[in-house]
Length: 102
Image 1 (cartoon, rainbow, N blue to C red):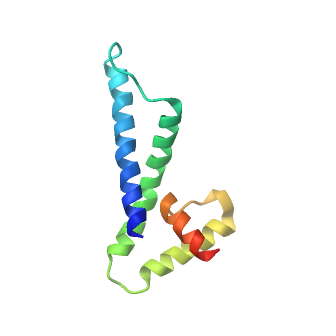
Image 2 (image 1 turned 45 degrees about the horizontal axis):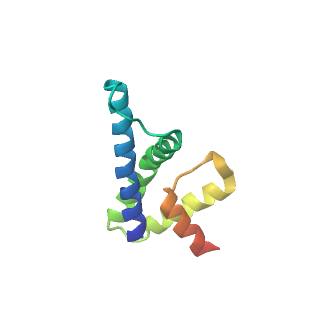
């Protein structure tokens, strides 16, 4: 789980750098080189991960036993039941948790 937090923070940092380059390109048109379309898509996907990680992070920090496990179980159940309509877990956590289940 610690590794998933590290990877999420690394991707968030990269996202901020990509958005900063895009902003520099918009503000300083002549000299700045902006990010590629692929980098922008990756940054937008990471931006979508931020609201997913905040409740997960709060539940892990809260010292109430069983709260995190209940949230993870509920999130996985809803994601499997509703398919692509609901996405509650951050990408790295989802990869780890789904690999543990399967």
